[in-house]
Image 1 (tube, helix red, strand yellow):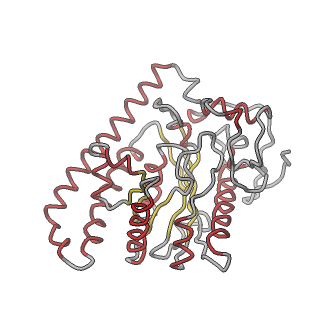
Image 2 (cartoon, rainbow, N blue to C red):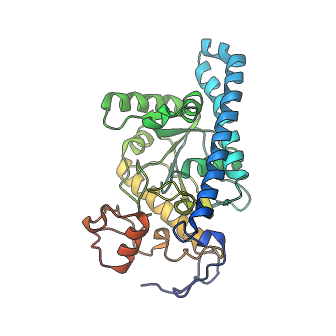
Length: 343
């Protein structure tokens, strides 16, 4: 049950009750007229494609000028650094910064002025709710002047232009089910971290269909424990309305991006570190969302549940349902959550 009280900022938390729907982010894609939703989707897709094409042209030009770096020791990392700066900068500005339908708000948890100090060679862990997450996280890193490589699903590398952007930027593909390729990717990730670059990981491995946190993949937490590199928690909320899971129709949304202070691996190893990062994500999201006045879903969002953290396993009752139907069924209590806690 919800207990009214004060948030960390000293402001009273909002009790559950009737909610207003005056802000565009409050309107779901389902509730929009189809023509409006299709128009939003068309504009956003064009912005993403335009950013990919412009970035690819600039990346090719930069490659022609900097290819001798590939002949030097450690030159490959410098080459990819330049390519990554171009790709992240262009895609962040065009697809997010100039996007009239996706409003973004950045929160630096633990720092009143700017992003917290992040030690070079850190791994940034972020939750995954939507296909819009990588674009939003790129914007977050751009605002914090943080250079990073992304871990992405190998199938994305087959996409024309967008896949080429990622390859040139030095992002690391993960081939699910192929242990040899996964081992090579992890070795490459270690090299990138040892060179002082950050790595961005979505530890759930796939998007959450209902906003609930899925079980983390252990590989990168094991790398943190092995190399002693810091683990940085980050979270995104609102992207599930910007680009809903299970569909291609997009909508208006206010997306909140938060990045917190690093957690150093301790004696508990990868398992304890994984639990600490999940708890940090939950804490950041609750602090951010309870202060939101422009989003009617602040209290009901899975991030702000007061229940303790544990991994979520989808009940059989919600299998095959659309994300909106899943959340409706879970909140009604008719679906049995097998040891699940809202994240």
